[in-house]
Image 1: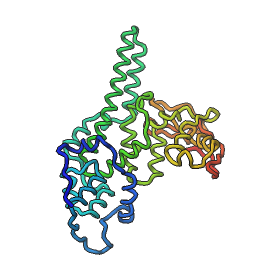
Image 2: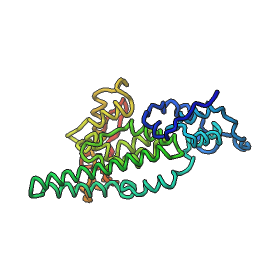
Image 3: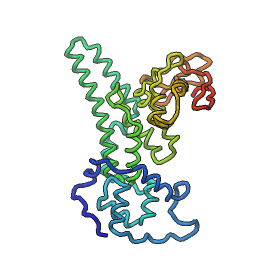
Image 4: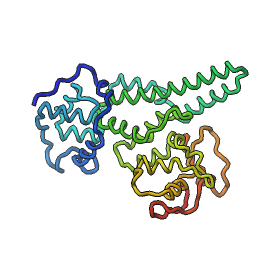
Length: 324
């Protein structure tokens, strides 16, 4: 079978469609990986055999399925490693670093250089200063500048994502990064979420995108971008907000027809009380007996004074009320 003719445009042409069936391919490929995800696909102690020659059509299909486009470089990588070697390399995200020029662009970005909390405090301080401008024109100009600063941070996050998708040799990792970022989506134009997008992708999704779903779900659920997007900062004992709990069951995990009840949503909302955000350098006033349970990591905050410590019953199981 002859190899299909490759388009003359670079990988960005393939990115435009974003119509690759990533998840079924990854489930299939997981069965091909060595146990634990490490090491080449050979029996212990056996000498590694040279990769078998690949027909051009096979190499093209494999590269096109696992990457954002079967470029000449990607096809050469498949042929060099062979099918098993290429799959194993992609599953372990061990194909190598970004090209130096692409990495240099990323390293120059504020979202790469500075913590999200620091950026958030900076833009929020500018917003508050703008609100007290003495004239309507001054307040409008300050608000425009605030929105532009948020937009710039959002564009940096998007540019970093695209640079990696276009140029990283670890193409399956970038496919899964896109898949999970889409699955756990947040609306960037709600409040100041644009300042959190880069951190959400970098610290909640990227470390876990090729790992265990439980770890990924925990990181996403507690991230300030998700907590703010789904209003969990308003979720407190005695004033329960169900939005985050409902989305977690309906969209993030079980699905709308999975058999959970409204009671399960309410109980999960109670579990999530107290998990919120704090964009200041000050801790809340917490009763002395609860201060040991206070947690803070960047803009994420668990405030035990807002948590429902009662026992819950969720999906037929008892959940002891013990805080974070």
